[in-house]
Length: 234
View (cartoon, rainbow, N blue to C red):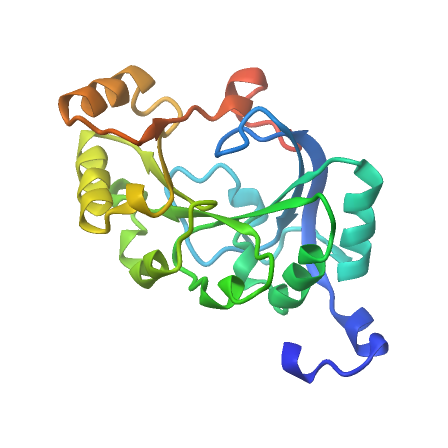
């Protein structure tokens, strides 16, 4: 465990299962369209029906074992200042807090964690210069809604984001219910997006108009419009 790390030797023994690392643009979120380094970790505790990275979520997925210092060195080598930790589910990586603390020490680097909403973020928020959080709320058609940790909304800050990936009007109604119940627009950024080829962006806009959804942003998964939606490493 992190609290038992007592030497540089022990620190170097900590390894993270990285299935991809690459530079592209952020396809969504507050820094959409900007260059970003992506570090994708193996494994996820959820199984959303629309997941576009199922290949990274199994125990059989090939990975590279990287230490925190190797990840930091890779980030520095790219000269890109936005870093996105994704998966899979990055917050389920053993000793992830140690890595986040090392990243928090980097100057002029913006670290974002994309997390699925089922893992508590309280420990992340205790870190000085903590990363920003992009927190999913898994809506009914994902089939994973029952796993959401709603206590996470106590820790949200303006630099954070809650993201609702919608498959239907029913999903949009549930998103609105959660946004209103937890007053999310007063706490953080809120985004609605569509499951690719399930509901159109135009339908979401109409729903936003009909429900007077101020302070909420529609986002498109930009990378899926630039490249083949099934392409890895973009």
